[in-house]
Length: 146
Length: 128
Ligand code: FES
Image (tube, rainbow over all chains, first blue to last red; front, side):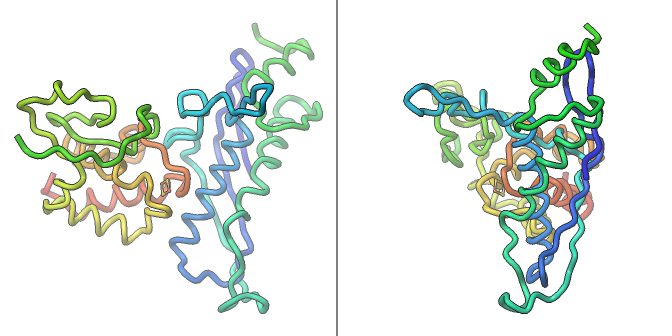
């Protein structure tokens, strides 16, 4: 679940709250698992909002360092929270499930759904959905504050 | 002048902040400082910092809250935390977030690292 605020002048999106709940089977190392979930969740929000990869005609990635491939910093999502649905999974070792990719999957959808709602319901269907994309939607609908 | 040993070479670009050292109480990206610029100054890298009491507190705090996932960012995070705490021994959450904002972490989502710094500040009360 992601709650956000959009500046209709700049298109900048501020994430106010982010809550992820994950079914992980039985946690083996609780702290590490929470770290994994929080990290993946933030990564998902990054993929959904700012992480644009640019390729040239030969398929080379053009933004090959962190000055033009931006990822979230400490300041981007300060209210990120994670809860676990802890139940024994009979197929896994010690009742555990794989937890690596899990937090990444739902985050972009949650982010985009929140942006969609904030922009008044226009269907949005790609990520990353950057500030420029937000402004494009606002301009198209004549809602931009500019 | 103490030995200089670089934590990591941040691929000559240093955007991730992993290659960090403290120079004259200021946090620097070691791969962006020319060797001639540090003649006569006091350089502390993680290797030297490891010998200190403050490091022991920091180390324990990072371990206790599992603030390390892959560990790539950890050297830089620890030195950034040291630089922050030596300026402000009791930072609030926002101040910690600002203090570490130049260092990227891909794994933890930062919450655990923030908690580790809070814990180090509490437990190392008086050291900074
Ligand atoms: S723990 Fe992997 S980058 Fe921070």
